[in-house]
Image 1 (cartoon, protein in one colour):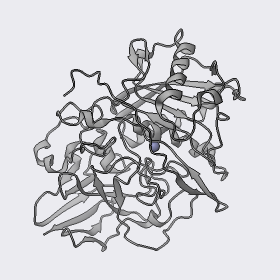
Image 2: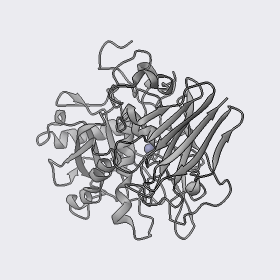
Image 3: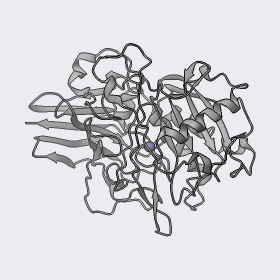
Image 4: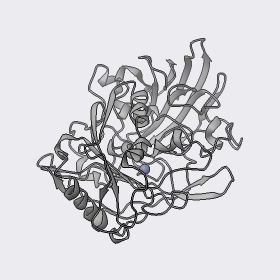
Length: 436
Ligand SMILES: [Zn+2]
C-alpha cells in the first residue's frame, strides 16, 4: 500500500503500436500514438478514491458485479475505478497549454495560430462528450513560442521514446523557460503543442504521446508535471478536412491523462473502429464508448443497467449515447471479474458525425488486457461486409457493426444474447438480454 498520494510511479517503455491508416489515395500509412505509461499495478489493491471515476450515487450496490476492476500487472486498464494519479475528468479541468519550438524547428506561424488548431474545438468536444460535465479551460499564459535551448534532434525523441532521458530533459527545459510566467500548480493537466515541423510528418510517424499518472516527473511550483500530453506534426490526411478534424489528436491524448488506454492494436483500428476517439483520432469526428463515459463519471450510475443475473431475460430501453439527456445509456453484462459485454445505442448525433448504420453497439470489455493490446473488441453485426462508410481514416469494416431492430448478437459459448426488439419514434431502442 502506498504511504500517500505521492506514489513513486515509474515510467516504462511504451508500446510503439503502429496504426495503419489509409489516405484518400489508398496509401498505407503507419502512425503511432503512444500510451501513457505508468506502473499502475502498484495502485490497484486498496479501494482508493477514483481520480477520474464516477461519483458515488444511488444504485451502487446493484451495479457491483458490473464494476469490473483492474488486474494486477496491467499498466493502463479499462477497470473501474480509475486509479489515483490521473487528472479528474468532471467539473472544471484547467489545461495549461504551451507552444514550444526549437532552434532547428522554429515556429513558422504565430504560436497562437498553432493554439487555434486545437481550440475551441477541444473544449467543445469534451463539453459535448461529457454532457456538460467536463468544463475544459485551456489557458495560454505564454502566447508566444517557448524556444528550447537545444535542437529538437538533441532530445533524441522518436516514436516510442520513453520518458527517460529525452522527455525529462525537455520537460525541465520547458519549465525553466516558462516558470517566470506560469504557476504550474494552478493546473490539472499540461498540453505541449510542438511546432509542427519538429520531427517527422504525421503521415510517416506520429510522435504525439502522453505521460500520465507520472508523479516522478520534474517538479514545477512544487507539483510534478505528472499528466502531460505532447502533440507533434499535423494529422492532415490531405482530404481538406484538417481545419475541422485535425484537433482530434488532443482529446485522444487527454483521454490518457484521464486514465483511458489505447484501443487500437498493433494491427490497427480493427478492434474498435471509429466508435471511440481512443481507437481512431484521425478523420471524421467521433464520440467515446459508453464504458469510457461511465469510467470518466459522465454517466450517472442510474444511466447504467447491470444485467448480472446468471439466467433469464431482462429488457432495457436505451437512449442514444451521443444525445444529451438523462436516459439510460449503457447496459453491462458481466461475464467474470475481468470482462463483460457493454451495450449502447449509437446514432449520428453529438460528436458521432460519421455513423452510417445507427443501432445497438455490443462490445467486450476486458480489464486484464493492457493498453494497445485490445482491451475492447466491438462485435460486428455484419462480418466481412466492407462496412457502410467511405470516409477517410474511418475503419470501414466496423462502421456497420451496430445491430438494427430485429437483429441479435449471440455468444453461444457464454450463453449471452442481446436482441434489438425495436426502436421508437424518439430513437430509443428496446433491448432484450437473455442469459443462460
Ligand atoms: Zn494514445
